Each structure stands twice: as C-alpha cells, then as structure tokens.
Image (cartoon, rainbow, N blue to C red):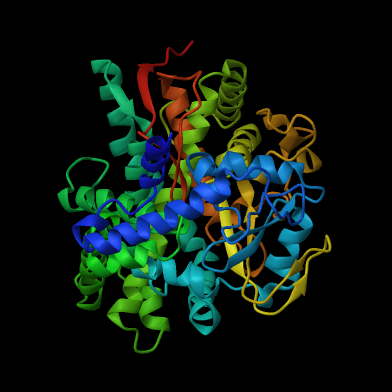
Length: 522
C-alpha cells in the first residue's frame, strides 16, 4: 500500500529534479510532501469545508488531494463540482496561498468582464507564468501596454481591406493546398490527422494576414515553419502546464536548474522567438512587398520606438490567436459531425441551396456574402464551440475586495476564473438538453441568432472581446463548406470521445485520425 502511494505521488514530482538536487534535499522534500499527502488524503472526512457543496477543502493543503486525483480530467471534474453549486460558483484554495473562485455563472462573467472590468485584470500570477512565452503581448498584458495594442489592432480589424485580404488568403490556401491534401489522402486511402492539417492551415493563413509572410507549412515546403509549429505546440502545452503543478513553486526549481519540462520549454521558446525575430527583421529592413497592408506594419508605424522584443510578443500573440483557436474548434466540429449524419445532411442541403440560388458551380469557393447565408453551418460550428470551447478556462486577478452578483466575497489578490467549458454543460444556462449537440438551439426562423457573450464567452466579452471573431467564422465556414462538399470524412474512432489536451487551447491528445473519400455529387 505504502509503495503504491509513493509511486502515485512521485508521478507529480518534477521528473528530472533528482539530477540536480542533492540526495539529502530530495529525501527531505519527498518525505515532507508525502507526509502531508498521506495525512490529509487518508484522514477520512475533511476537517473543514468552505462554500459546500463545492470543492472539498482540507487543512493546509486545501483542494490539493482531490486536485491530484482529478488533474488528468480537470475540465470534467471542475464542471461536476460547479454543477452541484447553487450559483455554479465555487471557492478553492491550494498550497502556496493560492485562493480564488471558479464560476460558470453568466452574471458573474458579465460582472468581471464588463461591469467591474477594471477590477479584474490578468494579474501578476497569470502574466508571470506565461511571460517567458507571451511576454507583453496583447493576451498577457494589462494597463497601457494592453490599451496600445488593443487600439492599434481594433483599427486594423475594422477595415474592409483586411476582410478582403482574409478572404483572398483563405481562398488561395483552400484551393492550392488544403483540397489537394484531402484529395491525395482519398486516393491513397491513408489516415490523415485532421487536427495537424487544420493547425498548419491556420498557421499559414495568420502569417499571411498578420505579417504578409507565407511559411508554406501546409504545403510541406516550409521546413522552418514546420520546426516552428512543433516548438509552438510544446511552448503552449508546457506554459499552460505551469498552472497545474501540484506545488506552485515546482516549476521555479526546474527552471533554476534547467531540467525536465522547463528545459524543453526554454528550448521551444527559443525556436519560436527566432522565427518571430526573422519576420520582424525582414519587415524593418523593408524587404517585403505590400508591407503596409498587414497588422505588423501597423504596429511598427503606430507604436513609437517599438523594441524588437515588444514586436516579437505581438507576433507570437497573433499566431496563438489565429492558429490554435480556429483549428481547435474545427477539429472538434468534424469529430462531432462524424457520428451525426442528419446534421451533416442539413449542412450539405444548405450549401447546395446557396449554390443554386447564386448559380455557383461546385468547386468555386464561397465569397463573403455567400458565407453570411450559411446560417445552419454557423449554428453547427457555434454549437461545437459551446461544448468544446477553444479556450476552456480563463482567469483574472481581483485588484480590490469585491462581492460578486451571487453574494460570493472575493478578496484582493484572489484569482477569479470563468469556466467556458462548464458553462456549455450547465442546465441553468442551456436547459436539460445542454449536453446534446443541437445546432437548432441557435436558429430562429432559419436565421442564426446572436447569443449573449456572457452566456457564450467563447470569444471573451466586454472590452477585451476577441477582435478576430468575424475573421474566425470566415475561415471556419470556408474550410468546413469546402471540405464537406468535396469529401466524406470518416473519423476512425468516432464513438470514443478524444482525450482533451489542456493547453492554452483545447486540443485533442494524439490528434484526430480520419480517412477521406471523395464525395459523389448527384
């Protein structure tokens, strides 16, 4: 029994720490930690409970025992806890004086993201854990640094020229790279990892739109782009993993001794920085044509004395936003669709009706106005994101003591996280059929209706609402329509829910293997 528990606990210690610490220090840390673990995990009922029926809180270690038992299923575990709470909100505490609130309550989401926005910035802990990777980029910044980036990006995202640039880029990527890849897979009857394909598509597209650089990653002719992709995936996964350490200081030890996951993280970040720096040098030296048409040029011109490091942070943030979110949403969308032929038929019927109405031959990509007519497809993609949001949990820090709309007290320095994944599974928000995939819930007289961003915070909400929402739907609907019309997608394990890989976005562990067959057109 003791040996089994020791092995269980050792799984949560930093894997390479024994290489760097003295034997005496290792034994001391292990015995101290193990004593606490055994004492509170196997001491019967917890001695104190706060905000029952929320998380079980034990003396000194707080939620740690249950956290260790459920870390591999963090999203579902926390969803189960929140669903039992009267206001879908729960308090928790972890070692290291980490205290906070997790919520799936739309009123609280509106309070923190809009009504009392200035009291809930990203905060020092969130920014610190992601600083090595994201620096002062827009997703990791607060205050004036955030305002400058937001203002500059807002102007660019509201221009018609950017929308046209996005349409042209997506059209070219679909026709010249995406469709040929699917057609080749159909001819060879090979298994295609659709998650990898979609991530490469999104990466090429965001690089062209934001920086006017084509890494050629989807076409397989961009070695540097492929190396960057691998490093970027490692950097996002390992950076987000810092939030899930059993002991919050563990990553500091590994980083100090440059071992284990922190060593790999620093190597990955170096590759990402090198790629971004190359883009910036090329732009500053004026080697690119059409250099005034992209987002990076706008930032170079708008921000006085922009340091290369600051521009690098901007580049990385936009790649994160453009690559990981849309690819995550579409990967889950195709998995869900594989076991729902009636919904697939509804989408195909809608596409056929649009083609007939606009006298558009099969094979031509859709223009902006035609994409806007795809109400059922829009609803189906939105429904996929409701259940599998690209960013499943987001956190803020409380600046000053506050009382949330449900009466929950929040102290200065606490974190407040809104749980988008859990919100999609709350009966109070979506009804008793909340766990069912029903695009019809988004439709009203055949028109896809707008939903409150506080009930559906997939694109965030309030002053920090996602500027690229429309761009994301353009890309997702264009890809889905083009692929579905031309090919039948056979997911290899359609009846088994893929294991979520909790990174900065919600990816599938091991990807999504599919077989492709060209669709017969009647």
